[in-house]
Length: 494
Image (tube, rainbow, N blue to C red; front, side):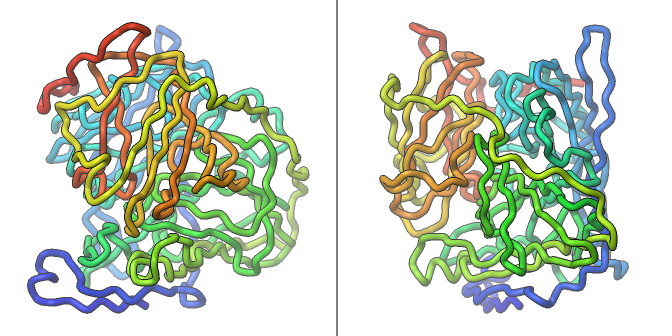
């Protein structure tokens, strides 16, 4: 149940004075089969490129089955989008057609690619226009995702439903005895929270005391309210994606059994981690393998995440909230599945002693290092082929996290301590516990462009929209940064 106390002016502005909490444990009727996003069709053109087509469009959906249609937006449908899938080494093209009544963009979250193809706020697509980025996949198998990234409008467009998965495959991952049949024993679990009005519309109501953004009281999993998944194999791989705009989740199973954590943002881990919890902030992903017993039902649940904040901020920012997320229903007879191996994929460790630069990024208020986002300002330049160490710190009790475009990174320390096993792999997004600096190592190996920047920002999307974002370029050795495209310049065309 959610209790929100509002004043007249605050309600009109979408602000709430107080938020007591949400607890749906034991109260969810799992009556709808989990929708699984379809694999996007692709074709190979005359240049040998894998070509996808995405149509950004408005729509409507009856989420609760009571006849109330919610106004939405999605790709190739009324909510969310299809799953794009490609192999390492392939060159891909994605033709994005904008049929919305407003500008949008499509950012390939977690992808290493040229800045001009990144889909940030400098690659806007006008209504009626088509944008066709192309790049070569050159990174390990991983669960990535895509979503809009217009400056000042990201939260609103993602909240309406514009997001989807981009799965990468490679030979190393394919050789492992892991569940890999999409939609059968390898299933995406895209988790989003929403508030609904009495008429069934999405409502973005924010707390005025702890400015995290929108915290919803209803979960959508792959766009499904109250979902269940029929499991037909002894082991099922769940690709967890926190696609919420502000909420953190602490995922586990209701009976507290352990599962196998096999991957995070940037792909498979070096070794399987046996655990009973995995916490994800907005934008983070995790791949887990759950072992099932024939005929049982078990619930994927999120308990109160550890925000590391004071009691007041913790209570108002969702740190006490609990949700029943998804029910797993095992068949009476389960097909056998191989055991999950201990060793997964080797990982080269970045040496912080080889770093050519150390940077400090302080998240405070609505800025980074005391500055709000400026589309016309490049904050710094990194040199291709070099390693850097960044110390990222949340200097207040309000929850923040950190996402960087193009580069996957390795977590070196959390508050001066070695990172937990769940942070042992490649990452592109990480939670920033208040007043505990996160040190990360990044290596810029692939692409350079002195004029077109990548973003780094808080992935609580209202924070990003209101200025907690910066820009950097990757340059060749000895090259100076140029000037970013003027705000208002676009690459989209008919």
